Amino acid sequence: MGTNGTGMARGCFLAVLATLLCAPASFGARDNGECLECHGEQSIIQQGGARLYVDPLKFADTSHGVVGCTSCHDSVTDRHPEDGTKPSHATCKECHGAVAKEYAQSLHGGNAACADCHNPHRARKSADVSGVEINAVCSRCHKAPATVKSHEKWLPVARLHLDSLPCITCHTGSKGYYISLFVEKEARKGAFRLATYDELARLTGESGIASLIDTNGDNYISLLELRKFNKKARDDGMRLRGMMMPQVMTHSYQILDNRWDCTFCHVSGTKGLQTSFVSFPGKNGIYSRVAVEKGAILDVLYGTPDFYMTGATRSKGVSIIGALIIACGIVVPLGHGFIRFLTRRKREHNHGQAAHEVIVYLQPTPVRIWHWIHALSIVTLCVTGVQIRFPEVVNLFGSYRAAVMLHNVAGVVVALSMVYWILYYVVISHAIGRIYFPTGDEVRHGLIRQAIFYAFNYFRGKPNPFHATPENKFNALQKTAYLVIMLVFMPLVIVTGFLLLDIQPLRNMLFLLGGIKLIDGVHFFTACCLCAFTFFHFYLTTLGPTPFSEIRTMWTGWEKEEEPEESEPSTAK
Image (cartoon, rainbow, N blue to C red; front, side):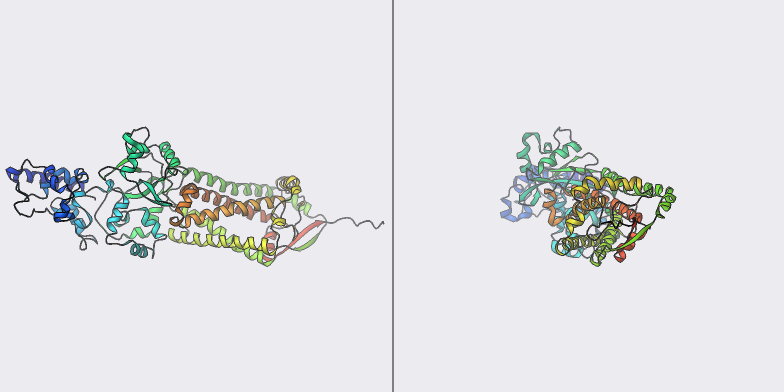
């Protein structure tokens, strides 16, 4: 399905020249049409087997069809087949010498002949076929179950990887890659297959099947045209499936060490995956490509929803939004801390006013254990997530694979800890409403009162208007923040994380929810909010009587509350 361009051109020229000089005069006028009068009829299969049949439509546009039948079968006479002479067969290396030499040195060289993989009457370039067809050829020997099993030893979600790229992408020495998008049709509920020419032709009529997406007929698919197609494709039982293809096909079949490193693909970044085409099937079985506007693969909402590569198909816009959210989580505490430093003497002066301490057992042991496990897991998710998203910049865990594995483990722990949190507060303590849901009065007055305290009165050394008790641990601002984090952002990041953990079995659900990249965008956005909250949360723990008093409370369970001394109560009855 791939050839060396220079070798092929030279070989074809020599073959044509040899045919013209050496062929019998009586055969000179014979062309492909004469051969196909017999070999193009399926009835010939009954006479000598399927190998004698040549599909005229599929043969016509091949490189072998251009140079002619007699280029390879030069011994055929004008009395064939009555003369009883078996036609000669040219060897592939007569034209494809460079390819044959390269192939002989590969792992396949001693195990398969050219014709075992290539039908000489359907020889096409790799760009003219789908990745599914390429893998179908490989699977004649490399059966799918065994291939998946062997790859699972080192490749995460092996089945998904093997379904998203042809074998030649990893097992040949190609340099560059592009994304080829194929139109798929829903065969049965949730199962898709490549759409045929006839199926697409019925939808587009005389305008040509490319008009299905290229609506203005300029042989170029804009991002807007792609978005429009993806919006309505689901209603029509269709979708675009992206596969990563090599730009140059070689025959150096081998096991490449750098393919074992996840960063070979997952740090390709926006530049390496900007080139994409939509491949439309032709009536003759050959695919024709239409270039797609750069950025289509990375478009979050309506780009290519069925092509996703962690760390590579990231959206620049979403990354900027995430960075701003995290920056806010860092800058605001830093700004508050700077003002806090400037007003430290004012607070120290007011702190000397008469007060007495009240010691409260605020955090029971089950809550403290949950808190530290949950906190450690969240921090692990944030740090590993940065490397997964930007692996070409950050490398804290030695390898991309290690970061992914640790991220997944931490995600599972966070999910389990959330289940524990719900069970404890709902089933055991029956306190989730009292502790985490602000009352009407707290919403009307408590939010403003606490906001004023943190923004102004704290710097003046005024006491915190809220005093924690075992029954009422959090002030109105804390309750609101925890409510949003624990019941909105945390479930979102967990659910989207599990959806992205193994895309293959949940592919239909992903599309129902808007596509893989939309789910990834939501996951990244909520993760950034959690990271920002982590910075806020850590800083707010330092606003107690001492910078580490709140942390000590979560470690020991006891909290010291300072309350101003009140005048002695009157004894009058």
